[in-house]
Each structure stands twice: as structure tokens, then as C-alpha cells.
Image 1 (tube, rainbow, N blue to C red):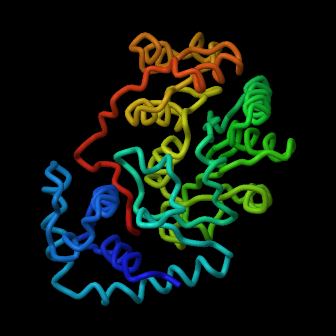
Image 2: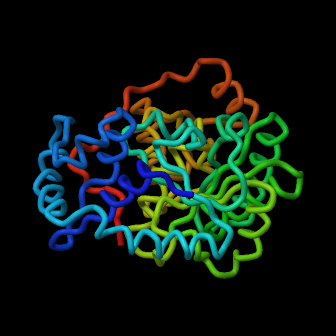
Length: 318
């Protein structure tokens, strides 16, 4: 049963005025600070550029009652329930703890499978290109296996290539894995990974930050990268070109203050990776043991997050 507070938060996420929404991460931050009532009364306590931009949208959207948005919410929740998905929000105790620590957190998550606070707090993203080489796949499998054996949960994005190899390896060794998808929870992309998605839901969890019916889009996968990074302690990038989504995740992770660990082979091959290492925005690693040491020893220099305050990558409501 959805609570009144959850329903009001979801209603605020449903506001759409002239194809604009209130920034979802802004809503999440305010709700997390106990400011839901202020939002429902048309006030945004946060002082920021994105708050200033969102305030007119919020006030126009509230000219009709929040209850007018409940029908759409009920339809989405019904669709989620049909595939066995559940809902958690920033207002709930089971919302992933790692997500609470970043500025660009999603206000809600639909998920299939089960959340595990202790295990999920020790998750590490293993990501890379969809067009992976054979040696890239081999490296992904080794990193995923060795991180799993060290007690880490493996997070990735269910994409072809490196992501698929990381998930499959964790499952093969009966270890926990988290798939953060770039669609609504009722969908699977790519379609050939549907059986993999089902296996992950049985033995780990599949997460979506979107409305359950949301189809894949050019904007959904960049937004997915924010959550893949944020739900993890750090991101290990195996293989990625300058146009790869994994490159974007490396940048996002650095902005979120998460450790970015780039394989030495990647650093040697890609100029963007060398620039990140030179700028102290990432570490070059030559072994999984080195990654584990950096993740567990406190040697990683936690950078102060410097998120974009303009809301360009706000979580869409469509």
C-alpha cells in the first residue's frame, strides 16, 4: 500500500507544464530534508539555480490539485505490480543508502528482486563499451569475479558487451549483482538480455529510476549512468571509447565524489582516460587487487562533488 507521503511525492514528479517538469533531483533533495509539505504548498526551500528554474513550473502545476495526478500514478504502479516490481522512495527506509549521498539522486526507484542494505552498500560498478573486444570481455569477467570473491556486489547497466559480461560472471559464481536499467521496470533493453534480467531479479535486483512504462530513449541512458554510479562505491571502467556511455559514467562518478578506477590498458589506449588520470579525477589500475585496496583502504581521495546546478540531466517524467 502506497503511503500518503509517497503519493504526494509521486504527484509532484508527475507535474508537467509546457513540456517542462520540476527537477526530479531537486524534489528528492527537498523530500529527503523533510520539506515535502513546503513543496506541496508551492515553496522550494533550496536556494539554487535549478530551484529558481523549477519554481514557476511547480506553482503552475499546483493550480490543479495533487489528486488530479493520482490516476496516472495508479496506472503506473499497476503496470509495475504486473511484472512483480516494487516501489521505494527517498522517504523510505529501504531506499539505497549510497544514493542518499549524492546531489543528483532520483526521488523514487522501481525494482524487481530484493534490496539488501548491507550487500548493496558494498556495490562496485563494472562498466564499459557495448562493442567490447574479446580481451575486454575477458578482463570484465576477471574483474567481476575477483571483486565478487572479495565480497563486493557487482553493479552494471544490463547493456551488451562489458555490462552483460559483468552481470553473467557474478551470477555464474552465485554472487549478487545489481542491474540499473535505462527504461521503465516493465521493459527490457536490449531485448536479448530479458532472460539475464530475469536471473538478476531472482538472485539480485533490477533497478529503474523511471516511470514503469517509460520506453528507452536517447536521454534515458545518460540518466541511468548517474544512478549506476551513485548506487556504487566506485566505478571500474574496463574498455570505453571517447563516445562510450562508460566514459560519461566515469565523469559523472568523479563529479559525485565516487572513485573512478580505469584499467591501465584503457588509459594507454584512450586520451580521455589519460586526461582524467592526469587531472587526478581517476586512478589507473593494473589489477583487481589494486582496485580493492583503493576501495577499502581509505587511500582514495574523495573529491567534493561539483554537480551541475542547472538541471540539464534532471530525471524525466515521461
